[in-house]
Length: 230
Image: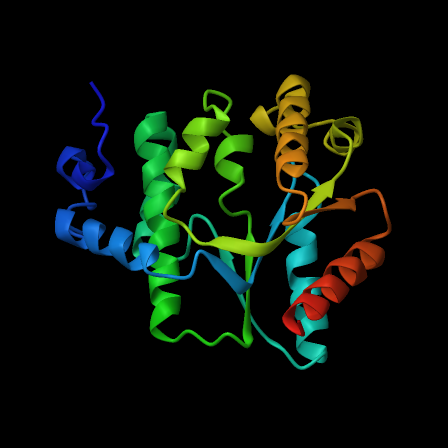
């Protein structure tokens, strides 16, 4: 039986290397630290979209555009490049869904706690996928379960959903044979993003991913700058 309390997560992990990284107390401190952060971080943004929507391409372009406009930008991804993030990346296929999702949350919490130590509201925090991905990328997870999983996490002020038709992605990836090329799964992901978009219209901004790359970059950059100046 899988444990149901996040605070006893570490007691139920026996994977080599993880016990040397953290302890139950450390995990509890992370939860408390993130809980004490503002519910909505007005300088935090994230990019979302199905696999192949152009997120990875856009991140450095947006960063460069924002820096030209005079902003400092910190980029984050999950898993992170920390020891915990590398551990997750190397072992993710061996984790059951319960453990995998909570390790991803822990990694995000650790990243935010590091930022809290040097927090500057004028520095833009930009995620390549964030809390929305728990629902869109876990076909076995309900929206209620996803919301409960990330309930202690601060919410970004704006989320940019780069929306592109799965058929276009599949055409571009015609030779791929992994789970990211599963037509039904890509369609389900898109439907889940649309569901989140309908439920969070003030936070989530739909970006037409079929526009030229520079148009997507400009649209997202302009909105981030506008939001930071409010």
